[in-house]
Amino acid sequence: MAAAAVAAPEVLRECGCKGIRTCLICERQRGGDPPWQHSPQKTHRFVYYSDTGWAVGAEESDFEGWAFPFPGVTLIEDFVTQEEEAEMVQLMDREPWRLSQSGRRKQDYGPKVNFRKQKLKTTGFQGLPSFSREVVRRMGLYPILEDFRPVEQCNLDYCPERGSAIDPHLDDTWLWGERLVSLNLLSPTVLSMSREAPGSLLLCLAPSGFPEALVEGVMAPSRSVLCQEVEVAVPLPRRSLLVLTGAARHQWKHAIHRRHIEARRVCATFRELSAEFCAGGRQQELGQELLQISLSFQGKPL
Image (cartoon, rainbow, N blue to C red; front, side, top):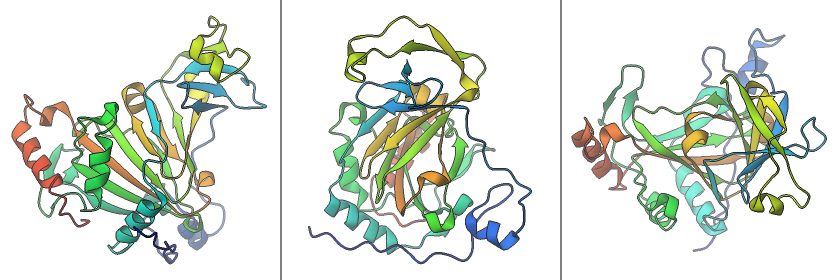
């Protein structure tokens, strides 16, 4: 399959920002000193290493060389080829992108959901796009995703000219299940994770030979840092697949900062159903209907 050239779309002159969220477009239009506030940077930055599962204090920081375990993050590099990436983005760009918050554009393939009222409609939902059939099949080849059946796909388009970003947030748990799966296309970026819970994280002094030495073990905790002051940077290579589960899914908020979008980035996020919509759950029949629609792979963006 020959690779197709992927041209960046024309930079929009309008934005979809609402409330306190902004992008470069509306900031320029409003002019002057903005009355809104951007998310402040956390005091202490740690970097996640996928080969060890540990977060380590950034170089030249107060906690350089100190580390703590950071479970719930799985990173699969080179999940798709360059040719597959180019074809997927080309197919996405044939469909309309809708304006979204904070300089993003989006394509939704899923039920219409009111999370506040916990209600949903299947009207207009025809399934995931046809080009995702192979992506979902390939996911099942990995043990962590062997029973993963997505019922929603959300494509997000980030562009530095629009100042694209996404604020720290936790995904819904009423409808969406344990695993959040995202495919990172066109450019590398950083997923920034933070936690607002009170209390402290216990740190270990990373032994010499890091990161290999952490696989064998570490010294006893001998230092701590307030949770609310920590941000963990998870590097996302181009064409990599990210899976968030456990604490990384439910306790740590995730974000993409504007400064980490240096070129066009497209992200496809896949979500599965929560227990309430699975076998034995209160809404299992609705869940089965959603899965049948989703996995027909006949969808168009809503």
